[in-house]
Image (cartoon, rainbow, N blue to C red; front, top):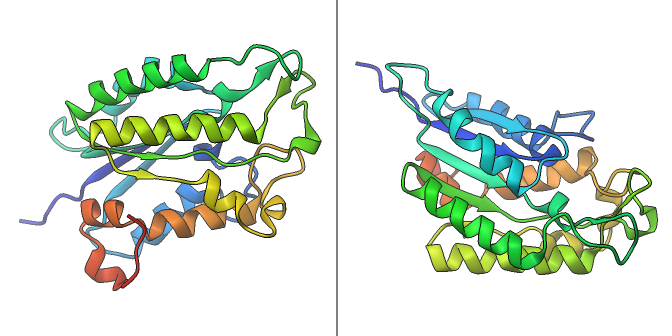
Length: 225
């Protein structure tokens, strides 16, 4: 009997959707195509919605998850959660109120993680920097790297507390000498180079490869935790 491949749901915002990547369709699409070259590798469902924040993902994740089984009502074996950038945006003015405060984001994220991990394997990805010179986005949303760093630290702390694999993004991408060249002209979305950068990082993520049973196929000696 042929083994049934695992199913992986990647849920989040426009970064998951792949907005800005005119060449490869986004880091999720790049990963999906790569895994298709490995017989038996997990099947990826990319479920990103532009503008989504934590509250929107919290409302839809369970229905999305339940609806992605293919055989005998089998639900996906794992979820990658990548959301939070839109929650950092201050509305109306540079020092306005964010869509969701850092404290509110942390509380909501912890509650969501606790719900998800009771039903399936969960991994979480961090946030990406923005080009502050291009703010405000859509003439009303102010994103700042200082806020993004704070919110990503909240993600990391919650993942540590809940023993969930976490792949940081902000510090690593911000540390690139040419990190602004990875960001689209709108200031918040990544371009094709930016999505490729994330794809390479996710593709070599040890926790993901172990879950996917792809460690030996990639034959990698130095992996992200």
